[in-house]
Amino acid sequence: MERALVWLGMALVAMGLLTAGMGLLLGVWGRGGGRLLPGDIVIQRPGFTFVFPIVTSLVLSAALSVVLWIVAMIRR
Image (cartoon, rainbow, N blue to C red; front, side, top):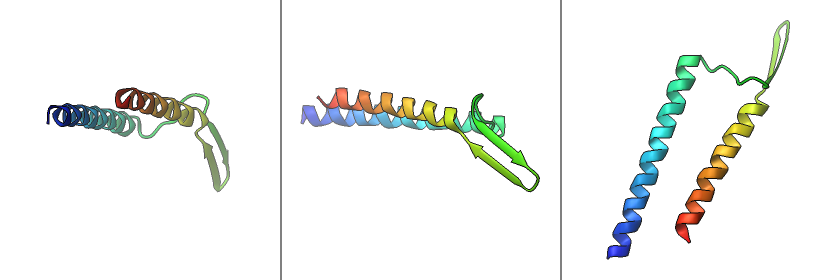
């Protein structure tokens, strides 16, 4: 029973951190108008716009990797 409560507490903390992180991300995204990070590729031609958010993808990948690494360390 005690072990289940510890896991429940950790799950609630993880969900809270995830919710706070998503709120922060959406707040920044909404205020910035969805601006891209420096280094993202944008090609504009008449009647055509191509956006390749390479730096944004790298930042999100690194953040997700850290979160999953922490989850894996907790599960051990």
